[in-house]
Amino acid sequence: MPSQSMTVQIIDQIKPMIFDLATRYRKSLRGCRYADIRVQVDEGQSAAAENGGSKHSTRDYAFAVGIRALSGDGMVAPGYFGQSLGTADLDRLAQIIKDGLRHAHHRALANALRKSATREAFGSLGDALISTTLAPIDIHQDTVPARFEVDPRSVPLDEITTLTTEISRSALALDPHVKYTFISAFTLLSRELFCSSEGANIDQCFALTQGTCFIVAHGKSGTQELYDYMGHQRGWEVLTRGVQEEYIQFPDFRAFCTGLAKDAVSLCHARPLKPTDREVVVVTDPHYNTLKVHEIVGHPTELDRALKMETSYAGRSWLFRNLQEHQLGKPIASSLVSAFSDPSLPGYGHYRYDHEGTPGRRVMHIDHGIFTGFMNSRQTAAILGIPPNGSYKAADASLVPLIRMSNTVFGPGERDPQEIIREIPHGYYLVGHRTPSISESRENFQISAMKVYEIKQGQIGELFCNGGIMADTKDYLMNVDAVGKDFRLYPIPNCGKGQPMQTKRLGNGGPTMRSRALLTGVTK
Image 1: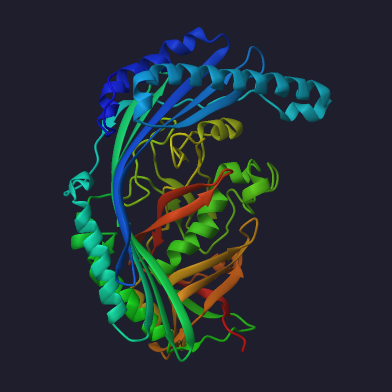
Image 2 (image 1 turned 90 degrees about the horizontal axis):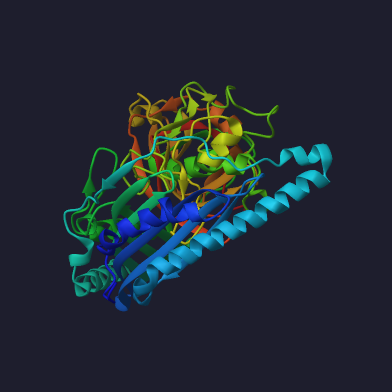
């Protein structure tokens, strides 16, 4: 293959070769029971500005391959290979992937031998070690195009630089209490190819565009730092026109940043919230619930976490202690609470197939208060004897996939959110999320809010800064007594998991909710 510039169109040229290597070449590796190959190409551009001056701008690409093999003559185990690539690798790509398949296969054989020896050495305790198997799935051959109006590759880099610089400058000039602004934006096209020895041949393309705003303001209550993101699986139009869809609603990027700067100015003059030693009534808006559902529902319903496969670096799940002690089929929330993960919803968490070719589908975690299940992979689904649900994703093709959220959300209710507030004699309204602090097994949480308002006789009152709530997870969910119909989705662009760390873009959200919790704040 002649050397050329790297574009997502490279997938069209290499797809037959990748499929052939996954299906035919794999058969030449003695003892290899299964193999899959993932190839990813990204084309993107970005710019950032600080205090009204251009900070950086770039146009770049990424190209990577990841390979998995399941091998063994008796005991079967997995082996992996991953590598970031460049244009110079195109001429020898077939050889790189053949070498990678052999490498993954040899690792799998070594793992299988060690697993077999360990099983024999530890007697009945060794019976816990079993051959790695993948739960069966329907095998697909499909092409999924990206959705956009303005192709991310067509946007002049100068336009991105100008937009971020002008927004940074105008936000800084908005009010003398604004002391620092950092504005960044990117738009990219990502294309992923998945081929397996079972015959899968899946080609998915995604457009992603995101704007990030970071504001520092200083006033009589001290310094306030606010940051937030807007983004969607669409083209450059996300930032220039905003998004007005049923579940995703953002103004254009200029208005978004102006609003955040105004909030920072208001907060730097607001009184700090004082913590309480008793529970109070709290209403949380959809943006706040975005981080809350992420931390107390999303992560603890990842089955690799629940099965203790990542305990040493990411924690466990209070929902599943062992096969005898767990919350499956039990009430963990009020009957008003439902929560699920759904890759068919729009936004950052949308996809049709995960990274082992399993079609994504809605996974109910809480169904009217009853805990009903986990996100899984084919391997973890096989362990529990349940169907795979398409939740196995990697941040980059060169990395091993992990069980990840898609769009993990609290389901909508039927109440008018304003009525939920009007019923409260005294309480607090939390708007927007900031920083989480979560226990190792996610059984309790503390999450700060961007803004906290006091509620008096059903009316929104004084604004407070530096506040949030903390609660036992189950107690908090059981105390939910009102759920709004204002369901919204927001991007989470920086979810970290794994070792080495994989930072993944996904979606979270929900409606307005009312419960009880302790207030956190400033004790001085």
